[in-house]
Length: 257
Image (cartoon, rainbow, N blue to C red; front, side):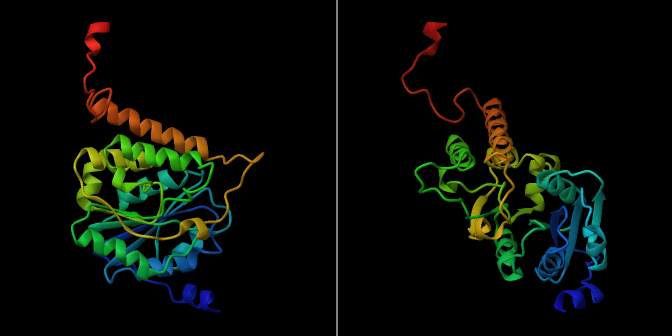
């Protein structure tokens, strides 16, 4: 009954938004109503942008009835591309990114808004995944390795691959919305340009996020995400040198060339 009532009495996007909440969604009719509802409560001057892609269950129609701004695509784009497209359309000074498949109460999302208001450019989720196992997932290792390589070890495994996170308008302009399609590269750009990047709140998305479908026991996104981190590292080395920001100490490589 509560969900039906929210469809009949939708939220209203601000005509002059201070905060934009971007939500990629594919076949999320079971959760999208409450996700939009919580997103709209983040700030009085807020717009909710739902990037519906590859959906066949009416997610776009539900989002429109809820009053969200809907950008709809026939083909699946993936969450990362959806975030990039949503960021390009966003009008707010602060852009918050969440997903359409699990509900995060507005009181937790406001922490990311407050961090940006207090001077952070890139506000990250403190969630780093299970790291104390004997065999740590390769994606978690990739996150830690990239941060160490960029002299950002204090971030541990925090990353733009994990929602929720938020960007200032300055950060979006510096990174470039199109680079959000490869989140580790977007993070590398932010760090290389000296933006203020901080983990600001812990949201346990590992518990909330639905279990990814696996074929033959293999996570289909694992190699893709690890590849994204390699792309980010390659970009960072191109912007610095073959050792990144780390010195070669006493080695004199020129003698063996």
